[in-house]
Length: 493
Image (cartoon, rainbow, N blue to C red):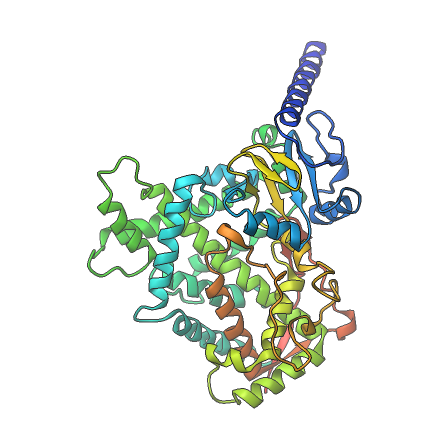
């Protein structure tokens, strides 16, 4: 027993010394921004709440300014707060900050593959191909708008079936939104009662929640140890592996029925590219990148928009006067019978402003995805060594008091001028910015407008509790802000 304790203590001391040497080396080779002093191996654990990471960073900003360094375990991370710091990095120095940083809780699933988590030439090739393919499907036989409109009608039908009884909207919304991206990635939509489809949506929903728990934050700090330990932090890995297996089966089916002259979906297009480059040993068009890029699109295209809709309906019930104004604008511009179209957005500044404000306040991914500098980079008088991880806090831009007069409140006026016309705000960056801006931004913006207008054209939202008692605080806040669970009623207008 004593021998075991001595070994454990000795190992801990060795790890601490190693971590201290790494910290000193980074300090010597670069000139990182100031920040709280880290303890060996533990880093700044006592400065960062694992159940409120973003809020902890915002507290540190008050002492160290908009650019500072924290140690997540032994790993230094440069944190950027406020729109100006985020823009200076992601836009003004876009190339230097275009690397993908470490997100240990899911890196072991992706291992640098797939368009979202790739780096270097692999990332450039996959991103260029993905953008081109999504654009081609958007202008193909069935446009993205037509796909969204079809799914919106299915959703309205499901809402009518509730007969004004209370229900949880979570999987109503994830089913309809997921079918839009599914029609592009897999070439078909799923029946709403498909058990496999529902299982996939449950896995995606749980993964997003698990990625935001304190366990996930701890894993991102101490992955070198926690990857070998049992515990709830391993749940994320298992969920994503199951999703990968599903994608792999879809790819297998596509391969068996592939017609190279008539690609049906994203997977077909990728398979055709694989065949064209099969003799190139350096080609990035391989099975692993296909499965993981398709998973990136399927996951992001399902969770972010459906979560924003779910949070948005809650905000509208919290602010019924806002919902009433949206109803009035819909009735005036579109009427009760004609199906809303994306062209209507130009004539509906208030509704557009409300949707922007919903995105700003809900702040679905407050810390953004981690970046890394691609070479030694001079930034605001500091030197960030190549490979340094960077957290551009998108939530800090969305709540920057220099750009939003009521940063913590819900005020569609943030996006309206004195004449009631829609006005852009450069600090509105829910899709990030620069070279790593969200691939699906155009599709997501279209979905949010069409879903909100279709639903509010036909229904009024009714909360089960008084508006003043509605709590919009996220149930979990970490990688993402997960909205609280709730039920509501939709009342035909």
